[in-house]
Amino acid sequence: MSDRLVIRPATAADAEAIDSVVRAAFAGTDFGHQGEAELVRMIEADGDALVSLVAERHGLIVGHVLFSYMNVEADGAPLSAAGLAPVSVVPEVQGQGIGDALIRAGLDSLREQGVAISFVLGHENYYPRFGYSPVLAARFASPFAGPHFMAMMLDSGAPWPLGGRADYAPAFGRMG
Ligand SMILES: CC(C)(COP(=O)(O)OP(=O)(O)OC[C@H]1O[C@@H](n2cnc3c(N)ncnc32)[C@H](O)[C@@H]1OP(=O)(O)O)[C@@H](O)C(=O)NCCC(=O)NCCS
Image 1 (tube, rainbow, N blue to C red):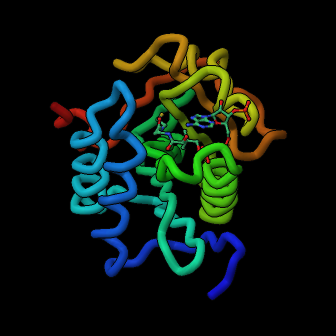
Image 2: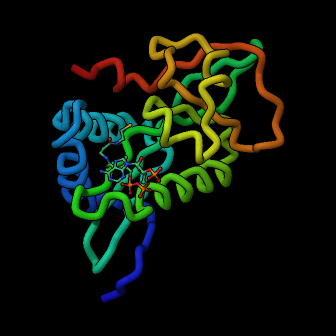
């Protein structure tokens, strides 16, 4: 079995393994791990998943990232958008670049789909390395607005919208 990390699109057969990975990743965090696993299931069930990738090592799924549809308006027009959440790596192999590889592959896949902008709600020390900026996100009205709310244009040469509104997929509103 291959020693290297394989990043590939998730399939329906991966659902249980993804559930375990998400629970394990969030078990020691302040976020409800039950909630994050439930969120993944709801987004998939609603058909709002845009990109779902797994990281596999030795044939085992050790990480997962999900990007979901967002309803975004920028400068008075709809803008295709994807929210990054959640990203999960099992504790045993955290800090080895797996989360990094999942997020970069996910962003590439969004670019291939022609998605214009991505948002994330997360740690301000982690996401800027991928290009996410709290300054760009602050231009968008959102219930999640704050220092942890970041955004990036997927085409780094694209001009930043001056203002707008950003709403996550309905599943986020059903989080307990
Ligand atoms: C956040 C997470 C997906 C990052 O994946 P990863 O494979 O561990 O991260 P990488 O190896 O790509 O990057 C390491 C960076 O992640 C950060 N990090 C977060 N949790 C970490 C951990 N337990 N161990 C090491 N680094 C961690 C560090 O700040 C590190 O930054 P540095 O490069 O400046 O040292 C993963 O740690 C995880 O699943 N955490 C629990 C779930 C979570 O909090 N998800 C994000 C919610 S918004």
